[in-house]
Length: 468
Ligand code: PA5
Image (cartoon, rainbow, N blue to C red):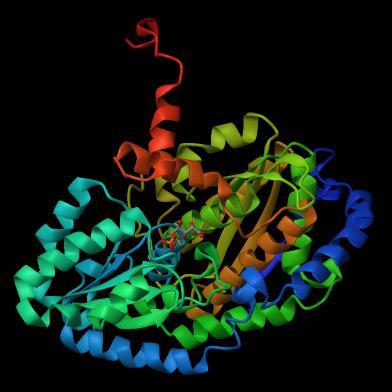
């Protein structure tokens, strides 16, 4: 059986789904732009913020070092905690959910064969308190991940945890911390050197949301016995499949082209709908990648634009009972991407029963494997009848190789889409204002933050009549 993931875009096309879909002529007319986008992305390979394109090829030594560290962590600790946010957390969480047991942390230690994993990507005070209730600091290793080395959420977690570790473990506390950060920038590397923490580096050209296949994602995965070499090999295979500048031979390029054409037709939402619990968090990871990369208000030539497509995270079949009504009958503003799994890693037969109730009895003798796929096909058909654009990405199985392919497929697709939209795919200026304002509210003492505090005071007064 081939392990290749497949992309079926028939339901994107007018030929299949009707006039609401994309005309073949529009795709054909886009071919020169697609070739240009491919060339632009290739020209940037390994340069500036496209270091992520080298990751499938340049990590042999680092993979060995990660595996050796992971083996030590497995020997010494009962829990492994990732402290990070955004790209430092979404990838590790998605890969862990995809490739390990769905109730991994609840498995007995002998079955897990590795520490419990917690990914702490928020600063909700109740969450930190809850974490400290369920871990034993003396038996826990923390991986502090931040590329900038200064993210308030992550560094505040570091301050809390390093203080708690010193109390709980005394002189031994430094053994409980692994740092993943930039080698040459930010404060965390300085702290890491001063304290002598075990440290891994995030290459300069790898931004947070493109970082799953570097130490950011690979350490937690290796600790939890995921085959990180197969993950990286899957990415390499996808990269090789996407060498052509002919979109009909390059799945990520074709997909980027169709998504941009869909945006031009008013489909400003991208619904990611995995039909597998193991892929649920893949939709979260994709949401950050697509939103933060493409949501921009300036073109590369400095012209105003408001580019982007809003990602929506869903789960099949669960959200058939929640959002499907909107997708079939609401506005024509969405593309639905199904993530289909051909072979699940478990089979759940449905026993016979309720023989007197035919609508239930007919399920007996079949399986949940059949039912989930039947429901996916049913949803696909309902969307087809409602003339909604959709596409299907099929994973023959969820394994480290196919997940590596999938991650890299979306990364490349995002890079091509950004090139087509003529925007900077790899920055995120729109999140800076919120950070600045939050520091100002926290009372940070600098000229910029003091000025921001003043500026914030000048907002219009809130009217009492609007507060009920
Ligand atoms: O994609 C990105 O660059 C961001 O979402 C970052 O991952 C996020 O802001 C966290 O940044 P850092 O790794 O510097 O803590």
